[in-house]
Length: 372
Image 1: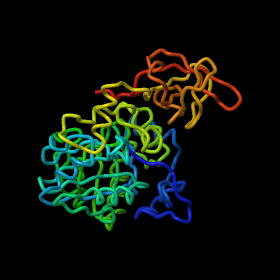
Image 2 (image 1 turned 90 degrees about the horizontal axis):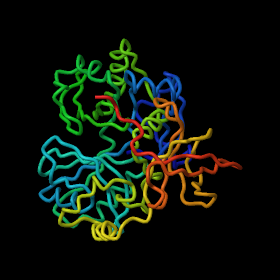
Image 3 (image 1 turned 120 degrees about the horizontal axis):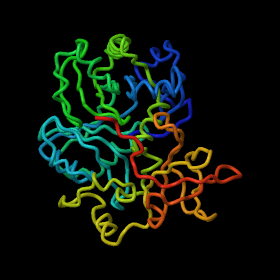
């Protein structure tokens, strides 16, 4: 989950690590209403660092919303597509924040802190919208609180993550499973430590009081120096998530797309008694899809950029939602919505690249899976 550039520079906010990014030579750009580093040493070396060693991202622009009270679960179940009732204490899940039309308000992570408290991590550009939307839907004995200002969020990602992080904490990291979390101290700072991420690699996301931002950021960079850890910007974050076939709000998912169209039926539990948009999604499941999100691999030279037209025998059939080089795979890839009849792997399509077309073939998602 992430978000797209939306705000003009004059409207941008800064994370507590803004000055640290500038000192490291980070190239700052407007992103989701924030001024964020897009790269330091370059997208390619940062991408390879995460795939082969480790990378550290400042993702403090993301939003956090606490839902608490006797009927906290009922509210979460009403507004999201996944089944939060299946969560154990200290477990998280990927989910969709849904409209009554069965489309996405946002994608998010749901964390269960207790039977009376659930914690949502939402996209930066959507945080205020999501907060007000959830409050509007709240007919339950639950309180909705935007707690984003209370947290800095860092993402340490890559195969060397545990080797870097374990000496800095007394928390036993190896037993923490994917999409589970715990609390404890890292570098002497109280943290929520979640085995989640947006890169397709192993890693942890750390949440802690912003006053300790530079202590933890600098401490992690120093601890990871011998492992080849690099500070990474949003450019590499995007190429990594694209290789992993992960949806980006405003590209693969938005308020016009349903989970089934986006290949996210696995986060849509129609066995739940009720949630916003359930009836629409059930009808779509019965009647079948008209369009579907696919993976594309370029056959001919060219890059399928976001927004490019997809054609079949010269006729427009869809558009590229995300596209670019895949550094770890050595090929150019993309995702697009096309009619279901054209979604079979091996189908040859064309991408309109300015005044010419280039062939691409449909391939399964994700493009990249980390070795186990």
